[in-house]
Image 1 (cartoon, rainbow, N blue to C red):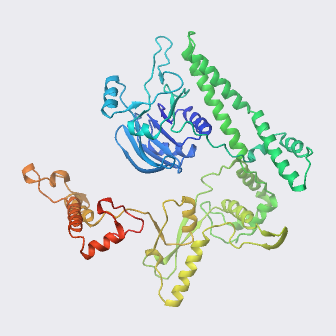
Image 2: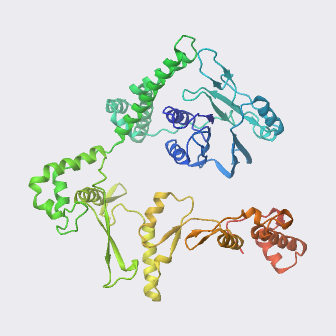
Image 3: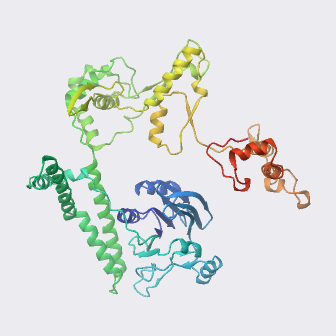
Length: 575
């Protein structure tokens, strides 16, 4: 999808994008005129459930572009300019790679025409309204086709029947452009799954009961399978039959907006603005409805809170408020009513005062005369009321027990000693390292150790694995820039770094310093380019002398055909 959204922060923009994305299951979205920074666009990406995002930030609330895509879309390369985002797509459907370029072009017809002709681009056509932009003026309304989708001749040979649809938008003056590269292909039917939110609706029990109790003849297994199928069909009809009041209101408002936009009655602009405000409210009501239904219902008993309070060591160090657990235990009959209400209120609203969540970090010395931070042990001093919430929750989630179902019978109980915490692999690794230390009498310094995760590892899994290894740092899969870059960095620091805490004067730029003296430069050698020249010389040497030992080794490992067609493999060694 391609869309000039005229500001991603508009209250109608994101709900409208969610609707279209849910309806069409888009693979990629290109937005222009986002008028926002990368941080907000990342938030939009999460709301729309996309995996990746590339952002060109807006300048002073003007311009801005972004491209979002899912992991199913294989992006091999990505570039950008002031007006484009360009991605190389590995298309598994057609077994070819092709470039997608999101272009925020000039509105000048002659300039646009020149750009298209210069790049030999042709219009792929469209379905829908013959315009993509409207100024929404009651007097002197202008409608033009400012947005279009173009292709090269080579791309047209790959995709013979692409389809571009103009989808009118209520959130922007510009229409959405939906591109279907293989329009004749039948799309996969969305798989049915039981939505637990349906439980919140009245009457679902009767729907299931009626569907299940219908008489079906056959074997017992046959009857069960077909009754489940009957329930699925009945649930789909039931789901399609009900619409929330907010959904009805949204549909009605959208219909009214479309009618107003096409009418010539005086005062249309004011009525459109009023309807848009009502639409924003309807979207907000729907979001709040499902947010409320999604909340977890935590039944809290007074006795459970009391157990959590009295399970604490009465002499534990106090938090910021200075109160120890002994105070709460000693005066429990007096204070219990308000404390219990406060704890219950938290589980009903999900809101916790910042002052209660404030924690003091204290450093306790491990030795008599500590000389560095390693000889201190950090402890966190939390408010007692905060500890009550934490202890109650941990009691709930760590007291779970399991049993195994074997051949239809429940066998044994398993009570996990580690609760529901993850990171088991990291603990096992730590245990292996401990065995190594005991056997070799060599202690591993975790403060000098690091752990590297694949870029495909989710952030939550990274944190859960890393947590049981205190002192170990995480490192990214960065790219080694090489010795020339390091030496160049040292040179730059010498000329432009700091001296006695003060920045040095920058008399001229690095680009000027590496120019030849004939070009009024200082003729410093650009070591990065020089290194590339030396590497090129090595390649020439291997082409010219293929029987050298180094030439034969590299050829056997990396380029069985020609070094000019060599690709970097995953197990390549760098030297």
